[in-house]
Length: 271
Image (cartoon, rainbow, N blue to C red):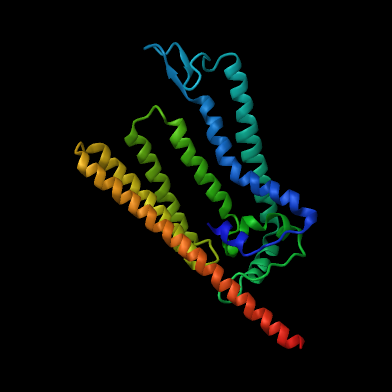
């Protein structure tokens, strides 16, 4: 949502760093998906009661933790989890931390006194290549994009790696994760615009409520009650989506209006 706003506001990246910036953006968006598919390699099921024969869940002809599965499983872990997840993102985070003072100065420049998006500076390498990571956040939240990545990975781990656990245990792990993220969100309030913080809290609360309703649906056998709970979940998510779209349109309108006013003022000064 926040990246869509910044994109539609017309941010531009200098040509010399455009390819590298695009690579970093694509990496952040693709990483959770790659991790999800990588984890599928480790999902195995028993073909015998004594667990002497484990096969891949989506490829029953391939035995788990032997031969090709062991080799490709370890290779996938090294490349995706360690190489991409730890080394690459750790390098970016270290770079941002080392240039924290530059980022603080840029944050003050990018967001005006009314928390409206202003034209960013284009005279630093950090702004050109990694601004999408921190541009939505305040001074203390420059690292928050990495927290979001970690949250996505944890959710994927719960959904894929715990496939053999009961629904209640999986939901319990999701609830613990959401409670921790709500606590961190309230503690840090990382977004530069206060409305973004409220929207983030609202989205986490909707996930929390939906998970609890799912537990109730699992415990109730009445189909009518289950349908009612399902309807509530759909309504809550629809309302949240409508609020996000409305805020996006309002933000675009205010930013364009503010930009036109500034252009008119500069034109008068020039004349």
